[in-house]
Amino acid sequence: MKTVLFVCTGNTCRSPMAEALFRHRIGEDAGWDAASAGIYAGAGSAASAHAVEALRELEIDLCGHHSQPLSAELVDAAELIVTMTAAHRFHILQDFPEVGNRVCLLKSFGTSNVPADISDPYGGSLDIYRKTRDEIDRALSDLVLSIRTGNP
Image (tube, rainbow, N blue to C red):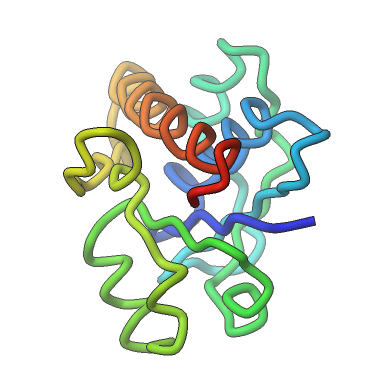
């Protein structure tokens, strides 16, 4: 089983939503699993209430999520490391330069191949979380297609 590791800042909003949405999209038989972590995450925090609600609206349960900081073990175990922003990617490459070929921005997949950041909803309204959820979900379509065609 290959693992994609989604990385954001605190591992309570974007990366847990990406992890859960990816699992929902890829299915159980694809040979891929997902994990998430945060560059500055503490261990054990729940997903934000708005992130939980935004995914609940799609019948995806995020209630069991517990944040975790990015670690060498997580990086080593990941076939693919997908960041929410260019700053996250830069941080990972500074700490783990040997994984440069495995670290990508979520929005770098697809036909346009124009890297861009995923908006941070932290502290925003439920509507902002919905918009971020949808932004992540659209980008995941391209990532899942890339994986299914063997080009991650």
